[in-house]
Image (cartoon, rainbow, N blue to C red; front, side, top):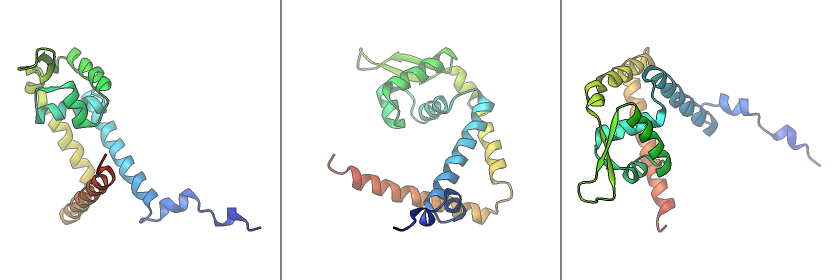
Length: 163
């Protein structure tokens, strides 16, 4: 009987390999968590509250269902986050223009007047994140990330085709 323990790789070894899937997942996850942690701390909003605000700034007046679909968050959770944002005075629920049973969520005048603060935080965090990275390397990284995104979109389409 062979000793399988001798052939098992240690997780640390996989993280040391720059081409391992584990290194990729850990790095991209940790980067996202760090970006969210710093932004959340500076704004006082949670990650999902921020996602809703960003989505509404891009396409204001969505229903709770439309927001849930756009952000891939459960509709009930969106309702909770919107309620929190409404309590902060950042969004408003208004009657749907054509469906009297539905409500649409709109960015409030308070948020519109202060959205530059969030953008300033993003700009400062971005500047800190890319400090010491050459422009050409940064552009290459963005192109690679865009290509990975397109590859994963294609994989998702293949896997969900016909469902």
